Image 1 (cartoon, helix red, strand yellow):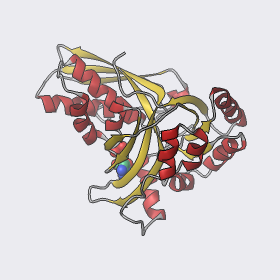
Image 2 (cartoon, protein in one colour):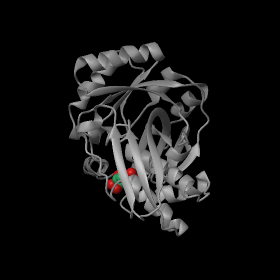
Image 3 (tube, rainbow, N blue to C red):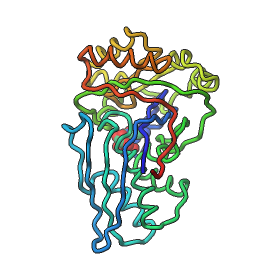
Length: 299
Ligand code: C5P
């Protein structure tokens, strides 16, 4: 199973809800940075086993292999929903930055749901899996579907967006990840009197996507969590400055950070941006991405 990373083209955050989540108004875009999850049924055990393999610089970052891994939680949730008892081994190949604001953990959960659905013969549709996905994490339903979509509720309610064109991104990855709950807590501290309703999706962003206009999209990118991420990691200002200085059409913190995203006008410009970021020494790695990508799919 192959599953994309996501970015948020806009991320409007409203008030803290009774369930501890914030109401969101966001536009997701899936990008072609993929994790892979392979599922193998365990015939003589009811264990849910996880192994994680890296082939990038992410190796220094710890990913749990126990029941706290979101992919393991996905397998347990599907098994309970279907009344099954079989075990499974999930082999995860990680390419999406860990704790980077690109939904790597949620992507693995989406892929685990689809992979277990296949090897256990559950026969659930993508929409049926999305209901289980919503319980696992706010981003998980979107990663089943991919493309461009509006996210509402706490991010788990997704509606496709009319969009044209392909968008080229350089993503500057940090050495250390950021904890999403900590970034939201910092957001609450910085915005004590926040309107409980998140800001509407900007019309100019939707118009830019509809017309496939990368310059207009670059101008319309927004992220309400950026201030909180930058307060926790002031050095990200330097990353953003390098990308802007190299002529990015738009620069923003990805989700809850610390990955920073730079929109390029085409593939050649993306390479220029990537070289500028990599040679500046302000980030640990640069990933080149293109969106939109499809959702989780069988390889
Ligand atoms: O939904 P997910 O498990 O990915 O969220 C991780 C954490 O991020 C939540 O526990 C919560 O602290 C924060 N969060 C939030 N509001 C959202 C989404 C996430 O406060 N809409």
